Length: 612
Image 1 (tube, rainbow, N blue to C red):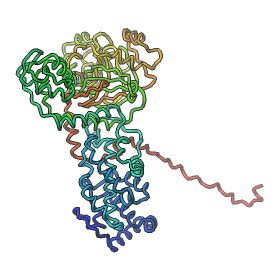
Image 2: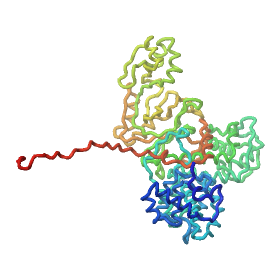
Image 3: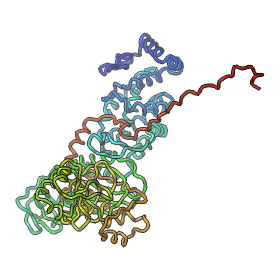
Image 4: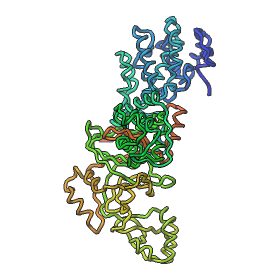
């Protein structure tokens, strides 16, 4: 790619910088090219741009800054232009009485990126720190060097703020089908300019980081676990057989020190929990709490699975928290009001009256999600708009092909036993057709479908929560209640089964007249399907995070059942400037229809007197 910076400032090539200013010949070439391309603009710029302002504009136009590891910045150029427009096209950081303080505050902010779950190396803090003493001693007419450093620091701060607010990775590239944001609610150039002017650049994170309570809890947990990873000795437990209270365990003191460090065992320096190898009830309670926080069956029995979870290095837990924070940065802002969130690896559903309330009213229930090896539940956002009581189950084509058709060779008995029927179409009403050779042929070709009638054994149970989406997944009841007792609950074909659908229906209908508890119970006892439209749609988020903080303040870690963490971790090692085009809904194109030209009124050639 042609590099304008190297053409006009060849001394910047290969990261070699000097105080040499551009000579007259190169500036003349630049001016003549500008005149040829934009003669009017060039004439205006020749009078309005002088000194450092001209150098700043050249750097921005080239979208290159050789001081940075990622020297190219096309996706931040628009914000950089706006930032320097706000500063009068002059230096933002250098050349003023507060330069030293503001720059040191800015570099300190970039150096603290790890405390926000970001990588300081992505923001060139070491290079900028190294160059600072020489830059501060430059003459005021060293326009190029001053402009290069000033814009480099601005780009790094813009990158940091953008990453902190929107995330550093495109979620769609990792199959996270989240809603694009409607519009920009954050003016990063204005926030940065005002922070510099007021000397409060260190407070910038509080203005740009996500406002979700969940994010704030994860950030606090990151600080705790980062410290634990530095100060807590590594642990390696060995379990020959499961231990119950009363058993002797030589590694008990080591186990207790670990449980105290992570907060599951109260720090009481007594003989009972430090100087004995007897596995006591008190230690078992601490193990039970640890098991609960790590997605294990909370029995208090020290078994191999529990030991394996304890042996996971704390640095890995820090990484899980960082990945969770990155994923929460991807989320658009929630509007006030009700919301439903399913965390897939947690096998949990949370329903909030107001997700941003200080003490939100929360419904929490177990769920079953899609199988890990196939039929994974997708990550998506959609609005719940309908509830079906006593729903039909329209058998998906993949299940029809793989599971239903092979069982139909024996005739009609299978369909009758499963309370199923063949239909020529879905919808209400649907035309049912008899199962015969012609129907079998059309089933195989996907012309006819199979659906299960409402009833006791219906796969969707008695209620279905519909939030229209391309993946055609939804929340629903199920007759297979025993699966909710299992610790790992990935058994479905992709949809989400809810353990307490009646309570979820009460939550959904909380603000809808005529739909109290009794009305819901009555609808669930009917024998025919009933569809109810919600007066106000409720946002539903099917999410994926292996670290999560509950409403009780417990920091949870879950197994990565779909192996979603490694691809995100790999993407974070290859930082790129996220384009706003992947974050926001593109503006609608206005199709201007040009009307046919209107002919002027015809002029009568006759003399005026003949027109009387």
